[in-house]
Image 1 (cartoon, rainbow, N blue to C red):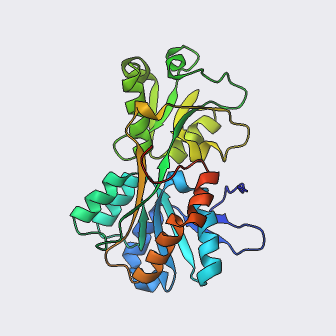
Image 2 (cartoon, rainbow, N blue to C red):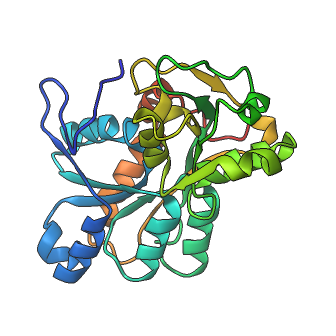
Length: 268
């Protein structure tokens, strides 16, 4: 069963708190030195699409291993830039394979640790009480004056949303209405606070917002969102980071991800 997790300290019944840190924390850790700040805790840099699913998997990992985990959430592109600039971390969970491939080609991940772990879906959402579009074409209507998307240059879900609009022949019509956010989590916030009349965001984020109706977008309209993981080069906890990656890709991890709208790692 999915839990309603909204705070930076996520706690499920009978289990200890999982620390979810702002992306700025990566820079602060870099200033202090990884070993001195982290100690024996794992630092996971994860795409915002995992903001609800990952803490549940981490709770299970901590129960099994007694290893503490801190999670930093952000857009995949911004997290990659920080890794490239020497920010500390143990495991990177990207919203697409391309960013992990980039880090691998640059020598920023431990060889042999890259693994796909899920596929994502995108959906149209509107604030509670608003008319839900029947499809992408409705976003051209005047009632949807502001449409929230994650930045396609740094957020794979934003790129998929733009590709879907382009494939449907709607990008030139909808583009003037688009407000770009740093991540899918921020795009969801724009819709939640009614600063956008609609949004195209990750299904995994939609499902954890009470009262939101959504319309799934045909995955044939965009490149498959294949999410991938890898252990970050320079990690002081390669073995534990690999164990967490293995849990995420195990049947138990896949089952948890499925509850949040993620599909299996193989392409549809």
